Amino acid sequence: MKLIFATNNQHKVDEIQHIIGNTFDVVSLKAAGIDIDIPEPHDTLEENAVEKSSTIYKLTNTDCFSEDTGLEVEALNGEPGVKSARYAGDVKDFNKNIEKLLLKLGNGENRKARFRTVISLIINKEQYLFEGICEGEIIYSPKGTNGFGYDAIFVSSGADKTFAEMTMEEKNVFSHRKKATEKLVLFLNKLNIR
Ligand code: ITT
Ligand code: NA
Image (cartoon, rainbow, N blue to C red; front, side, top):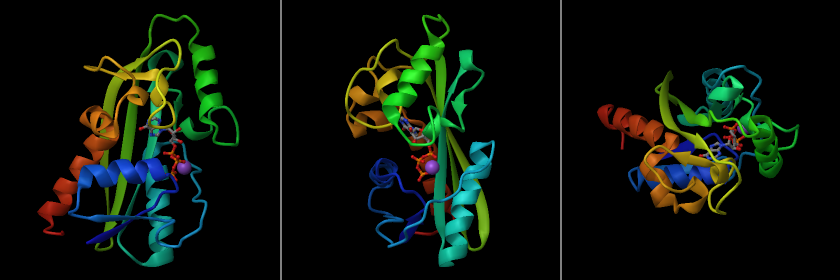
């Protein structure tokens, strides 16, 4: 079955398609021919995820899901959190976001951080949320070139390298997105949707 994934981030599409395998065909907005900058005006990942899925549902009248992800750094009171995409300014610039975060953390000893993904699914006119958390820490300077966003400065608990030094398969062993997506798949399987 086809499921529209209300995102403009191709990295997310690739990761989630890889986790889901071939049970579901994940169709990005681009692949569905939908060119829209979805608003994310809220203060929580949950509300923004719902906003994205309901925007696309209203537009297409088709079952769909979305996700909002944030990096929550303990010593920064949970920042950048919901502001992760545009932490350093209006344009989504990963390098500037990383630079700002490292500057704010300085040499601070508490490097604890977590990625949190919230998936919003709309199916049979009902809306559901699934959460995935990956605990870890922020290193002192970027390492690796794979992945996207903050991957180069984040080392997951239980790992010995950054997400940007991992293949997608390796990242998917630990990742927030993987945990949230597994819950989504379990739920769809229970509904007997395939
Ligand atoms: P959509 O809203 O179109 O889905 P986006 O890139 O704007 O895509 P978010 O609003 O969820 O996504 O922004 C979260 C930001 O957090 C994202 O732009 C990345 O910079 C970062 N991010 C999300 N997932 C990440 C991951 O797995 N690894 C590293 N950084 C990540
Ligand atoms: Na976004």
